[in-house]
Amino acid sequence: MASINNIERIRQRLAEGQICIGSGVTFSDPSVSELIAEAGYDFSWIDGEHGPFDLNCLLQHVTAACGTDMAPFVRVRQNEVNEIKPVLDLAPAGIIVPQVQSARAAENVVRACRYPPHGVRGFGPRRGTRFGAIPMAEYLQQAETDPMLVIQIEHIDAVNQIDEIVAVDGIDIICLGPNDLSGSMGKLGQIDDPEVAAAIDAVADAVRANDRVLGVSTFYSPETYARWMERGVRWISLNVDYANLFNASREVVEAARRTNV
Image (tube, rainbow, N blue to C red; front, side, top):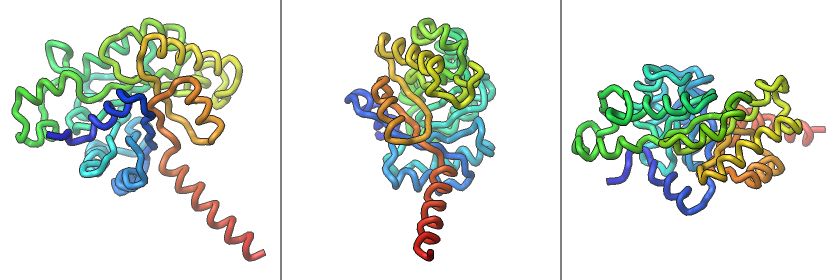
């Protein structure tokens, strides 16, 4: 039986050495998730950290991906067991945890997302079992590795401990957060600053050296995309819904006004 969230599509692409491309979701309307699925993205980045979402709204975005080829990933607000638990029960393809700054914090992510004896996740599945269609033994076996776990490296303290962080078992993707990382260095938004770039390269080098998957969330331009590919990024979230809408809207109105001159 295929998964309810297309997690196998992401795993297959990564196993084949392909790039997984996603986009950010911040608007509450779940049709946004349907739209980016129809546009051809591999995954969504549903932003529960900064977006105006309650659990029901997150659920609508996750279920909007059902029946498409897109895998929904949800970023939680913080690395805390009771914050993560109800999001896990929505059965997304992946959980994204921000501001992971140490190996211990990475281990806490794994423990929060896995049932005993491998973790401390509370038991209360619903959608994950397809409401009972999946036998419990099969579900529990799947839950040993599902959902995918993504941790964000977005502070200089995490960079300084990156070798220990990448050695933690159970993390699927190590994702750079370039803007917050630059901010932690007193250079917010200056992601091309030599010191910030060196910190980013240190993370990329450590991830590659340990044969782990490197990810990033960033805005798109051909030049920056090429640089991320050179660093070995294989899972990349490009732009967000509001930026895409604003840029396309401005392009249309400016083009129309030029025509009327």
